[in-house]
Image 1: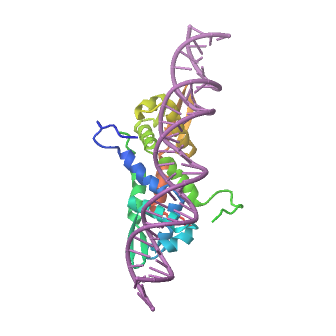
Image 2 (image 1 turned 180 degrees about the vertical axis):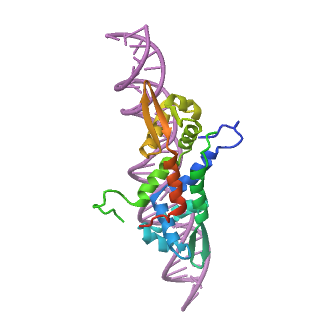
Image 3 (image 1 turned 90 degrees about the vertical axis):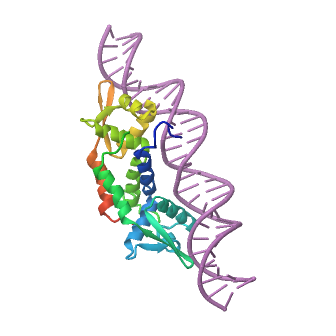
Length: 105
Length: 105
DNA sequence: CCAATGTTTCGATGTTCATCGAAGAATAGG
DNA sequence: CCTATTCTTCGATGAACATCGAAACATTGG
């Protein structure tokens, strides 16, 4: 699944789809919801795992995907790693869906 | 973490993830973009296939997913099937991302 | 009824990915 | 050091899915 090398860069559509895919999973939506429901917007892996009913390895995998998409940040403090939701990044995706005609080039 | 069998539908997160997944594919984003770029917002499968560089069977598959998610409608007129984009449905997903704290139940 | 065109379905194939348990890495505290 | 705790990585497994070519289906026109 490589891109046509003549096109200068992959589409908007490819990059936008990547960000949407990071969001398009029920577990990841719940993780973000849990983070957003915290006053500090952050929780550690060991707190999130029981909240979504999955093991730490699986939750760590999902948090990594969210971090790679720029939707959360991670910060180690002592033994714990705290993930924080970035509502602006999520809202930006929503704004693009609402306002911008999706690219078709 | 199981669903209440009394509730006819799965969670908010599950349903929202379903709609996001329908959108989270570069081909489907391009299809929607092409439809939106038409004054009538509609095109038939045979017109869309070359626009995204894929065969009719594959395009038909993607259009079916978009229709199942309520993002496009289909209408047969003679030999052709015209798909029409529903911008309000797309915008509604964007609005939910912007305004509503994502459910974590 | 037959042929042509457009569309979908079917079967097969390869990839992505969610999940798990086990093992490895990092950090804090005796 | 050594141990306990937390977190991530690794390897494996099964499910979902994007894609293709071929076959089936639908509609229109001769």
